[in-house]
Image (cartoon, rainbow, N blue to C red; front, side):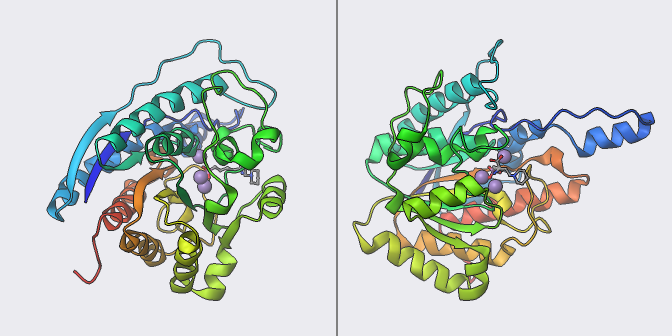
Length: 327
Ligand SMILES: N[C@](CCCC[B-](O)(O)O)(CCN1CCCCC1)C(=O)O
Ligand SMILES: [Mn+2]
Ligand SMILES: [Mn+2]
Ligand SMILES: [Mn+2]
């Protein structure tokens, strides 16, 4: 196995609501720390590297090439478009990421995109597909991230990436500046979700309309993770065995394990279930690209919580590349 690492320190796919408080300074200071604008997510790539990802991958016999962190140009007048925030910045960053991931794939590696927020899946999946053609997507997340710009109730593009990529939704996506380079590249039948537990009404409508395969946390409880993975792999390989793009949002895991993330939701995957998913996907031999996003060190009050989040993200990636709990 060989991994090509791309860091994408980008956080404009989400903007926390501005808040005004008029209370004593210490409380404001604490509040600012606790409610830190979700900007901390751009420190994710370096925190995961600092945990020892590259060294550990090499230790387990995986070839590794680190392509470094992308730099994104600061746009000055990126005015909102309706509810949509940072549209031009998100479009530009993902265009750059798409080119980077395509290059990593052309070099023969399994791409590893370290986020940054989940809007980056636009560029990661687009670039992956540009290199390998049609692919399957396994989206592990508390959220479906399939709002269109018109169904989103926040305007945050980290809740919308799949809508720009699905062939079947293109009639529902308006023309946006810096987004015209995106060619839809995923079929609804090639998309599977695991871990959903916070799905907006518009997203639920879209998932039902397109007949997307979903294993929400209810199915994880009902079937157990082993059966979920058996059915996921059968479903993905029932037709052609397409290369798999695994897009892992760390908030799929329960916040008791990974609290340092922007949009935590109770009742998530255990550490063990999270690992079972990546071990199983690795064993298919079809894993061709992976995203690890939404690690946000600033969103947790204690360093221990940050470490738990970062180490879990690293462990999930190590098991994508063959690490087994049995040794
Ligand atoms: N669906 C949400 C959350 C998206 C999370 C993005 B991810 O998965 O990358 O972290 C909105 C969630 N919604 C906000 C209002 C209260 C109910 C939940 C959105 O903003 O679209
Ligand atoms: Mn996010
Ligand atoms: Mn997500
Ligand atoms: Mn999420």
